Image 1: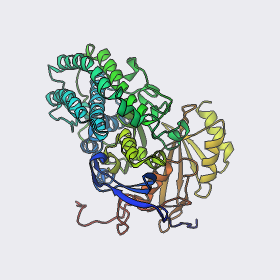
Image 2: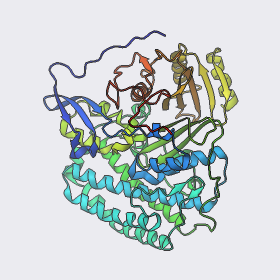
Image 3: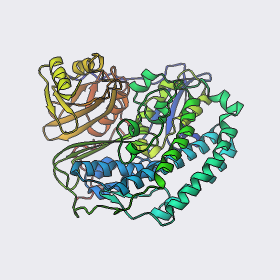
Length: 374
Length: 151
């Protein structure tokens, strides 16, 4: 085929172009946004990424499957446990291994705890982005309790590496059930504070309602998944549509809104914390007895072919696509990371808003930069 | 529509395409020149309605680059894999699907950045992660003496 490539000029002549980042408190990491402004109005946002690109996909090509697990923690470090699960499920489904119920239930509880602590950090830092310093202390106060539970069972606070192909690295700590129940009881009693400080706050509502609207058609076309997509009415929860692990035996609601503005993206995350607590409560008293891991071969080799596994991480759909040539390491491994795809919509929804709104819009998409760069 | 009917329907849209029932999904392979027209038909026809491009990626095979599109329909919930292969490795070019799914813009930039496959009619085809002086690291013949230790 012939090549037809056109040169593109970013921003028009009368635009005033500024750099937001790479070091900017509201980008939560090394993300650089080149913003074209006309007065105070945003006309174009070009994200420049790759400052912490580590080439995880290339590294995976020379690593074995159990080794890859530890790299997945380092993509989206706030949903580490769920990222582990994605690769584990891909390998287990490819080898057609039956996983005992105990492992499924523990994985689901861990995933939901991960979701809660990530949304707590989102709530904390989003409040701070918009000028509410107190939120940060309230959010982190509660998040510490989840991280303590992680530390007791897995030894890690954020980078847990708890799942491995065939099950779990180690069994849960004897205190695990007791502490999780204590946490749920405690968190239910303080969640009203979150609404009191931020959700009902007049300044916060003025700054978020009606800002950065994303319609349902655009959400699907741009592939925005997770709470950001569900705030626009895009029913994309993998836990609901294609249940994996123990999600088929619990009852929960998929949080859906129609409005699709910044406020509802925020609200979707706060509501998801409640749903996650419901899921944990249904499972925590009925963890079945059994082994915590299935015995696997010392060298795991996937049969030749292609494997695709979807999971619902905190920020949306994570897909693992493995092309195997029958060796102990993958021929090609692709992570479809939710943050990377969600970043693509930023220019579309922040056009024609003020630059101060750009902070609110970018914050509501809840980026984790290592997941964008990989 | 069940899987077999879906496969037959896609076959009727583009008789040249090969349709295989894979383990997980239906796999459709088309020639590089036919890709864009088939993608447009899959997106727009009422029976298939693939409105969500889940994943777009490239795989380096010795005789060309295979570009893989995972498509899902939010209306029916079915999913297929669409594959195409560039002719040769020297000047790999495909037609962009940005006009069909907006999310392809970022995905295609990533494929261009890491594999060097160019996309015609892409609105803004620049390197995404890396500097323009880098090679294309996901190619199998990529050499980096400093950072990649070979055993």
